[in-house]
Length: 310
Image (cartoon, rainbow, N blue to C red; front, side):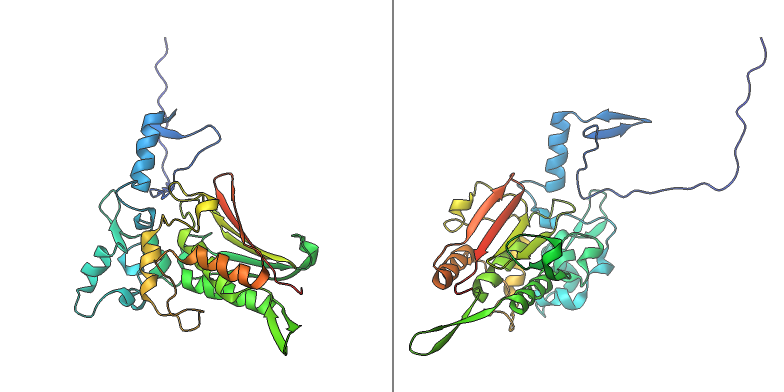
């Protein structure tokens, strides 16, 4: 029997690819898999449940406090974070107490989801689909041939809201009715539109990777589609009666910031008056209530009807 052949040695450059731990749980075409040694195995349901709880920190940490891979304390923009830190406080300690900087499972300091969203000028560098896509169509359906205006509203949540709000202002019409004198009638209530946009960025599910908020304007309505189902046991019919949020930091921190160009003093409020205000202002202007629809438990759609005489 001949001697065993020796495996030839290979010399030369070696390419090493490091893949950081993901913020999300990804499903391959073959299901949820994990690597053990050199082979792949299906994750058992109990192990998958533990993984989901670890990533989402259910009951312990809200998702907006989860660490973002490939970020570090140096990515936090101090001028943005100082809005939430008192002058007497130690800045480095304060941003950690606020949940803007957290530790990942390896103990490395990272920006949280809220830290990236609120305290960086370009959060889309890490959260690429977290913006508002605005499109204005002529007519009553979304047809590219009838697209009149479009804008991707980027930046932190407040900048997204401002960009989308300006988009609606720019494209909505102003009519007139004659009573004792001429009275201008806007197509939509600015208070209702602003509140709807704020709610969208505050309550969207940032865990749904690759989904953006969509603002579509038509001749007779606005459709605002927000990624994610409803928090806890809320239903579309009960939105104006109850309050819940999956992003407490994204809601609470901007509530401290004044917004002089908005229809109210603060960018965000935490009293739970958003949906009642949307309903009240829309009905007062149009005579109709806005419609909320939950689609496949993964998207909430709000329809704001336009006012007559349009």
